[in-house]
Image (cartoon, rainbow, N blue to C red; front, side):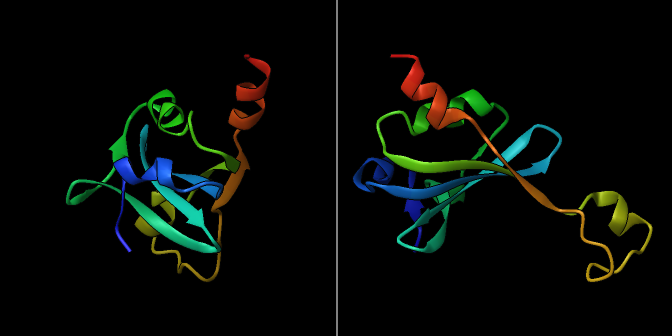
Length: 105
């Protein structure tokens, strides 16, 4: 299912927002809704941003259970020919956006 930015406000509650770090300061957004992960689109292309605050603002009017920043395996692993299944250095860290939203009012 292609999930468009304008459809986000219809999804309440959202299980998780995953801010996926594609490259240095380039992010793509995935939404976990009713247990299924969806890519967030802007028109025909996946939504990309270089600004975490812009991404946070997209979800101000939506009930989101958790936010995480995901960083996949580094490009260095691929450059040196490291097989993906040998060394996994991807990780997710929680973003405090839900906490910040409740304490700023």
